[in-house]
Length: 477
Image (cartoon, rainbow, N blue to C red; front, side, top):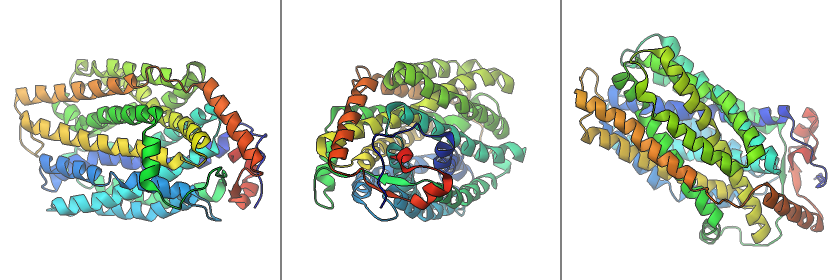
């Protein structure tokens, strides 16, 4: 095995970052199809009630709560000649493809057992792919600012995947009620992109496995989980991520209903506005990374969450059916939201460095597993709260059924108040955050010194790929 040079850490090149970011395309595509279109499609076209949809989504998110910490521990303990996170990225791809097929091509008349079972498979595959990719990213970019650049690029590349899926309803030139084929087409798009994007990253990017300074048993999931979860920084990240995802997940779950029935747009027009929201992330993600480099990640996150809610409260001012009038608000909200995920994931990588310094073992996957766990709990709560609440307030998502004016008003209030409260709470979780650039530089210096004293930085796998692309192993340490 080749050895990487600890002292030489050139800045990650743009080509390396973009190649590594490829798996973000299918994941982001799936998030849009899953959160915006699949749930209404199942309710409107497959004969499943809103409450059952909400309960199924919530149940699956709660059922697989222990899965992510276990995956995190297993990934961090994995050492193979093919790599640690590269291996798991390859394993997760086929599982995700199967789950997407069964959900996006689901037949009419499915019940709760079908929904819960295949949702679990799909979310399992997504957890494996997302955990492996983000943990690998934390290793690929060990420096404070490089991490913001890398995760900013992941968000920006993911925008491309979102837009890829959004072109389907936009080009359909019809409303969703007349075009049930839109959702299956989204599913096939995601399925086709998964193996291509994963193969590109695995083929072209090497992985470095840092040495462990402390020995331990092969698996100690509960002990590891409790030791990491008890850290104050981890708890802040966990609850901050949970609140932000509840807010944004609530908004996306209700989005199509709100813009169609409250704002008077058809599905094509709603998708165009959603495209504007997402496209603004191409600028918003790198801009957020740049701002974070000047003012700190936690300060930037608090500002963007506050600004997002300020924009969201103005959405009822959009004249009904006026697409152009909706552009400025959607641009503003999308720009601010683009930084949420990249900042929390970049901060999580910094926290993982602190844990490795203190505990002597790699904890990257476990930290990201806790973030994913927070997002899953948040997704369950968003679905369990928003859809049954709409039902209770008199709003019904059934083809051909006209809702009362009061039900439409309630829909608008549900769309704004729920997301606004939770996103603000998420930003507030980072008041007084201490792990800034200066503190992280001290942590990295101590880690580098200890790694050097151990006589190796770790095995570099995928060296042939590194040589083929002209990447020196030190650029991925």
